[in-house]
Every structure is written in C-alpha cells, then in structure tokens.
Image (cartoon, rainbow over all chains, first blue to last red; front, side, top):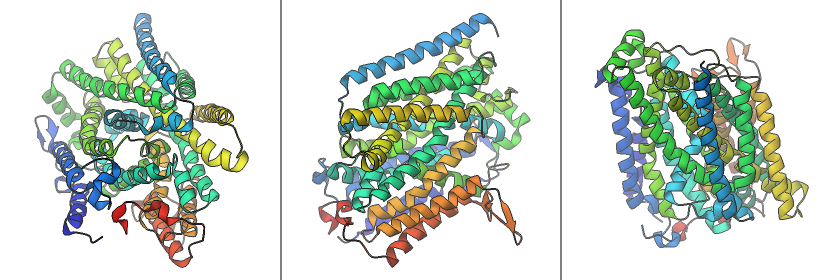
Amino acid sequence: MERQKTDYLWIGVFGVLVAFAIPWFLWGDARTWLGLPLWLWWHIGWMGLASLTFALFTRRGWDRLMNVEPDEVGFDG
Amino acid sequence: MAESALLVQLGVIGAYLVVALTVGVLAYRLTGRDAEDYYLASRSIGTGVLLFTTFATLLSAFTFFGGPNLAYAAGPEWILVMGVMDGILFAILWYVIGYRQWLIGKAQGYVTLGEMLGDRFGSKRLRALVAGVSIFWLFPYVMLQQMGAGEAIVGLTNGTVPYWIGAAGITLFMIVYVVLAGLRGVAWTDTIQGVFMLGIVWIAVGWVLSAAGGLDAVSASLAETNPEFLSLGGGVYSPQWMIAQAVTIAFGVAMFPQINQRFFVAKDARVLKRSFALWPVLVVLLFVPAFLLGSWAAGLGVSVPDGANVVPVLLNAYTPAWFAALVVAGAMAAMMSSSDSMLLSGSSYLTRDLYRPFVNPAATEQREAWIARVGVAAFAIGTFVTSLFRPGTLVEIGDTAFGGYAQLALPVIVALYWPRTTRQGMFAGILGAQLFYVAHVFLPAVTVGGITVLGTTYFTWDFALYGMVLSLVLTVGGSLITATDTDERSETFAVGVRAE
C-alpha cells in the first residue's frame, strides 16, 4: 500500500513530542511560578498535549500506519 | 521509637497485605488451570485493568523509592527523564511493538516473546536465547524490589525493624502470591494498588505541604538550601545522561517479560488505544508529586539515615505514624505487584521456552505448573540472598537491568517490521549486544592507548546506547549477508490485509 503524506506527518509529530519533552531552551533556568520551576510547568503541559495527540492518533492513524483494516481487528475505529 | 507507633505501623502494613492477599485468593478461585488463563487471563483484560496493571508493574521500588532518593540528592529533574521515557517514548513503543505483537499474538496464539520469535525464525535456540536473556536481567530487577522493601521498613521504623526482615517479608509474600493467583489475581491487585497509590501520594503531598507551611514556603526554603535544584540541569543531570537514561529505560521496559507479556493480553484494540492515550497523563499524576516529595525533603532539612529511603523518613517527620505506614504499605504492595508480575512472566518463559522444548517435551500440565512454581520460589530466594549484600543503589541496579533489556529491543523491532530479517541476523544482534553489555557491566574499565575501554561512557554517552546501536547494526547487517532458511516463516509476522 502507498504511504500517504499524513503517515509521515505523524512520524514527525511523534519526533517533536519526544524532542521537546525536556525543555532544552530552559536549560539552567531557575525561574519559578506558583512555587514550582517553570520547566516543571512545561512538563505538565507537554504531557497533556501528548495525551491529546495520542488520542487523536488512535482515531486517525492507528490502523492506517499498521496497514490493517479496522474491521479486521474487531473494532470500527 | 515509641512502641505504640511501631505497633500502629506494623499493624497498618499487615492489614494492607492481608487485603491484597484476599484479592489474590478470590482471583485464584476464578482462574482456570490452563496456561492461557494462568498467564494471560484468557486475553480478556479491559482498559482500566490493563492500564493499571502495566502501570503498577512500572511502579516499582525504582520509581517509588529510587526516584525520590535521586530527587532528594540531585534535584527533581528526574521527573523530566520519566516524562520522556515513560510518558512519550514508552507510549510510542506501546504502539510500535505492543500493538504489532498483539495483532500477531492474537492470530498465532503466542504467550511469550521467545515463543513468537522462535516460531517465526524456526529456531528453538533463538527461543531459548530470548528467554534466557530475559530471565537473566530479571534477577537484578526482582532484587531491587527486595532491597526497596527492606530500606522502606528501615526508614519507617527508624531502624527498629532491620533491613533483612523487610526484604524477607516481601519475598515470602510474593512467592505465595504468584503461586496462588496467576495473572488475573496479579492484574486485579495491580489495579487496586495503582488507584490506591495515585490517591495516597496526592494526600501525602497535601499533608506535607500544609504541615510545612504551604507550597511557597517549601519552595522558598528549597531555593535557599538547594538553589541548584530549581534550575534545569546541573550536577548529575547532563543532557547526555538524561537522554541515555530515558532511551535505555523506555526500550528496556518494552522488553521486560511482565510488560512485554501484557502486549498479548488486551481484550480488543480499543483497550490498547485508550491505554496509549491515557499514558502521559498518568505519568504526570504519579511521578510529579512523588519526586517533588523527595526534593522538598532536601529543602526542609530532613536528614535520611544510611540505607533508608527519603519518602518514609519525610512522611514520618510531617504526618502521623499510621499515614506514613499506609504510604509505605502501598509502596511495598506496588513493589510486590511488580515482582509478582515479573516472577509470573519469568516462570512462563522458564516452562514454555526452556523446560518444555529442551528438557521434557511430554510434560503434563500439572508437572509444568509445578516446575513454574518451584522455579519462582528458587528465583525469589536467590534474589533475596543477593539483596542482603546490597550490591548498589536502587537506581544503579535498576539501570543495569533496564539496559540489559534495552539490548533486545531493536532486534525485536527489526524482526517485527522487516520480512528480510534472518535467523542468523537475530542471533548476531542479540548475542553481540548482550556480550558487549555484559562485558561493560561486569569487567573493570581498562585504558588502552589513552582511551578508556569498558568504562561507563564513550565520548560522554552511556555504553548502553552503543550496545543498542550495535544490536541494530548486527541484526540488519547479519540479515543482509545471510540467506533465509527454509524453515523461517516471515509470513507469520505479516500483519493486515493491506500488507501486500
């Protein structure tokens, strides 16, 4: 089966999720907000974003990227 | 320590363990006697239970005591490592390895990783190699749980109850549990414990914060005593170290017998999808508060005695004795569910991949079940005895085990996706990387011509990463230069009608 552009897009999205899970641009930064370091707030937000992205992926890309038909695995997407 | 407090602590821990055991016995009465049911609960595990049973399996002494200890000593950046590793990388592997294995396992009826690979490559030896390597690295990881339990009891009772009693207690409990319950029991208690731990750790945070004057006060005292903790990086936390930890642990976790076997048990694809999407949120909910407790303890001037863990000591200082005991009981229970799952999976590797194919192909079901249980008991006693020597810190020992499993991950991924992979390539990749890794763990570093060989890093990067690269190169290279044998069946790994 031909790979579609969106398949590569998903791979890119996962790459970005991994790459910025540690906020490298805040390296050495000790600023805090509401008693917690800024980089910790970044972490909390990023994990939330990752969860939403993963949820979207399960609807749009999950079976496509694995080359299976949803009905083949007993669930309609 | 006051005698009444000690009684309360031991009473709370004892009561908790009895509840956990009761659940196991109930599950035992529902468990069938065949292997699919004992090891896989008949592939009938739903979202909530799969999510928590995998999660609780990760919730070991490594994360619950080792992590806060590290945050206490070096700052809370470990949260970020766990985030990349567990929240994102592992979730992706959950899909890349887990979903693929689930599809293949469902079609072919596999129960273990070694069985799957051995069948695909037509090689009993490959099957045994994968099982043997997996059982080998299980040893330090089970030992880690026993050390964690021993240290937790020391910290909680201020040394009144010695280390070996905690370690021996958990050993006994996990043997009884695995022998009785099977996966259904383990999965049920994992779920209860996962929910319990999640709740209790937030209550602990609230309690410590209110007793210590609120988040701002705690944060201010941390900024005064350990200003470097608030800034990202520094000390042990270099980018190379953080990346190496996250990558080796994430890939290692996917190859853990107890985690990998979970990839076969989901009831349907929906269960896998939901767990996948909920994963990062669960990671934040648990690890952020747990590791912050460790760092705050440093700011609050809590001093941790030798051989104890920071969490019980901190809770003893800021919360009532019964509550501290409850948290420790929960953590010990979490460690037990990790160990139970590990031992259970390890025993299925032992009987299905080693005993039956090589020793006694005609063994009856009863005999196999008996071998599995004796194997579990012998293994747990062996790790217990070794744990008495305290061969390293929790994080060091955990790292060694994770790194060993990580060496398996890339050959498995190659095999799952590349039909051209050959048996020889698999042997080259798995054996080569294991030899490389084992040499680095057990042999002393030597300097040859100004270059340190067998040290912990090359060019500041951890040797485990080089081992993973080596495993990939050997698997792909070995497959390219060897021919597929007639009894290798790449079609067993073909997935989906669109595959052609």
